[in-house]
Length: 455
Image: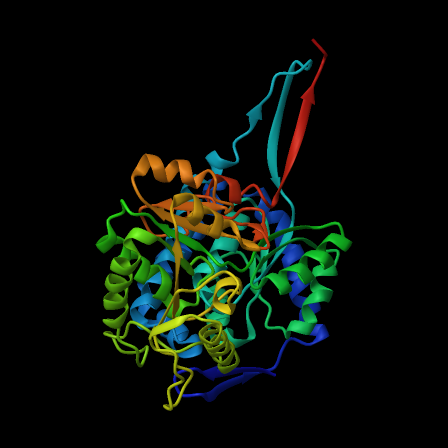
């Protein structure tokens, strides 16, 4: 059974049987049957479907958003924003897919030679619980607009969200089979990846799970895009606007109760402003309200699962025993649910648990650097390379960004995913890109055409 527990209360709220072999075969067959007529539609016709999906989500945000609040504890104000961001992704690709995939003429010995971008077929998306709607559309909007069909295997802890996402397509009269929900147990996924009808895989999740998915896909000679874990560095230099940085980094670290791959996780501060920044940061973190995510004034909801909360607490306690100082939080609440307080650890090093492991929760980690070079050394001393940020003058920040070993850098701003811009990591944070003009080209056939006679 796919068991969902409300992290606010700790109580089981639903149990869903996974698809059996017969049901799974039916769904796979539908995806294949839908592919040819879907790919033959014009970009404008496919765009109409995506725009209708986006409009439906915006009109029904008050029905869709609470599903995230109940199943994985996202504060309701953040849940509403996520539904609208998912709609924005659908709208963006509806408007821009055709230009992103336009034919590219290339001079050769042919009378005319060019590259055209064609769909592959059914694409499998394996998704986590932390952003159920956004991640579903980050995967599916570009894939669908390219002419593929989509199979969504969502996390077992957000079954109602997954069901609702698929039902949006049904509600707007989308062609049957172009987007389908696969409620499966994790151990069932390998057979789907290996199924010859699945042409490529998109995976978002932990680095260890991503390695397993990638190895299975590679053994079947299938493409895989991986968006994995991160321990994102945030460099704050002496010439930064410290007050603005403290407020922005608070949002970056604590949004979604800190359960974000691209959250600022290692805040690396130049020594001359270290104490000053810590005080501003501590004040900003202390102002946040933890509580029932269904309430409008809640800033920090619960951790999605108790095993994740226990691991987070282990990282905090181990880091303290290794020499970190805890200025806020750090104690498990006695109340119901899987809450963890906003926690501030300072004097952390990359050798400590909170410095070298990915922390997935409302735990802010501050490190001291001697100068900009030392900050860059600390930032790059990680097995991860998802995203990063730097706070300094714009020109200096751009120069530092070129030397940061991450897939995206924000200079004097929050790291975020944006449908207009490519996102993805290096090292153990993944491979391939999602979003922007780069993301839509991950799941297409870049077909070369040579038209003679030779010149």
